[in-house]
Amino acid sequence: MTFNDNVGLDTSQVQSGGSGGGYGGGGARRGGIAVGGIGGIIIMILTAIFGGNLLGSSGTSNALDNTSEVSSNSGAITDQFSECKTGADANSNDTCRVIATVNSVQNFWSGYLPKYGQNYTPASTVIYSGRTQSGCGTATADMGPFYCPLDQKVYVDVSFYQELSSKYGADTGALAKEYVIAHEYGHHIQNILGVLGASQQDPQGANSASVRTELQADCYAGLWVRYASQTTDSQGNVFIPDITDTDIKSALSAAAAVGDDHIQAQATGRVRPDTFTHGTSAQRQKWFYTGYSTGDLNRCDTFNAASLG
Ligand SMILES: [Zn+2]
Image (cartoon, rainbow, N blue to C red; front, side, top):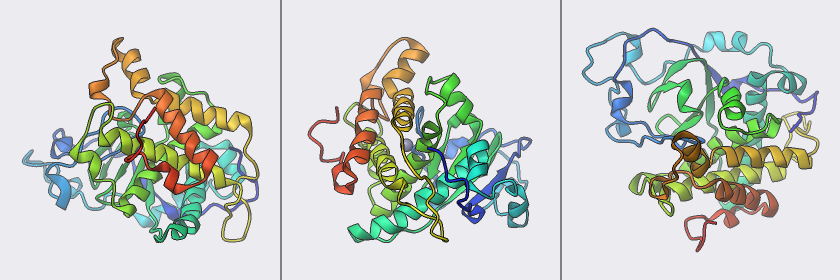
């Protein structure tokens, strides 16, 4: 979706994760990572739930061994995103687009969630390049965007957008990119609502809690799109003046691109529903569209849906 050229971006909602490529934490992912990424693998919380040392006994003891806050170099943040000031910047620069999307998504949820008796608590997005440390272990670009419930942050390497179209086959439209961010914030909503843990108990299979969790996050992304044209910045400027059929087509193409059946068929030529974690392309499109077309949080109850398809 195209942002209003004049809407102001709030860069305080994002952080730079830098591009710390050089440290020797090869075992960093071993401790387990809680993510509900947009597609691909999910590695669930194992030992890390109370913030243990994710680098384990690998012996390295540089500052990055501390998993708490690598991205807290707040002094540099303002400078880091100085090119992202307005919606016009978001329309021409993918990093700025992430920031504008984060702003819009969070403003939407802070107004919408109280209608359902819950308060929204903000979550930062860490924009990084290559790799960075998250509260759930090392984040690398090939993992795709994900949400870490332990530090309540979304992690995104903007280079994923290239892969989303070239590797997975989504179209290159703006809403394809924005849907990815909105999906990850859907996991944050699930965390607030206390349902995110279910996917860890039942992590794979066509009807698993993991698939239901992912499809619900898609539905929540659709809710944001439904109300995006009514969501404003602090000055009352609308973020996204209107949503076109082409936008919706882009979102649906992204949802289809990250379906388990599509990813598996592309990677191995075989589709194995017993290993599904995110749902099929058709299911992901269906639930995104359910959120978008109904605008009702309660219609996103994938956990009690008789049929996911
Ligand atoms: Zn997810």
